[in-house]
Image (cartoon, rainbow, N blue to C red; front, side, top):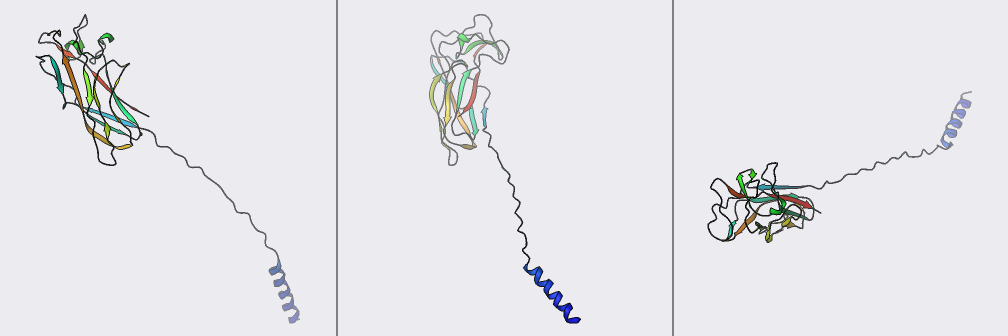
Length: 202
């Protein structure tokens, strides 16, 4: 009796050992990860006013130190343009026929409304550019150009390399050439113009 029990156990063990075990298919899944780097550009103008003072002689009167720009962008190509804003911060802009020219104003924020005097020549603006150490790029300046209205902005500076760090302290040059026919104003008035700088990228 004992012998039979052991034989049966042995047969059962061998039967289990020779049974084919099923192969389970592996479970898989996938995830798509996406993202983008948004383009950005910041433009900072330091120096709110340029005072050319009393212009007592004909010829060019230039300011090279009052206003600087700082530019930061992750675009490969960028530029900064300038245009006459045609106003002094008030809701009563000057006529577009005076675009680019310093115009008679009775106060710091208001042009003379009726037949204001203007200087004969348009204000001119340029930048000498600036060379930065790597990784900051060199920026390309411009020669003096006559200011115009917002429909015809002039490019005062540009860059053609990525600039993830700000290029700062870019000097702007303002030059006003006066003519013998330009009229003096009462001491309570001044010739004024507002220049708007705009950054663009591609």
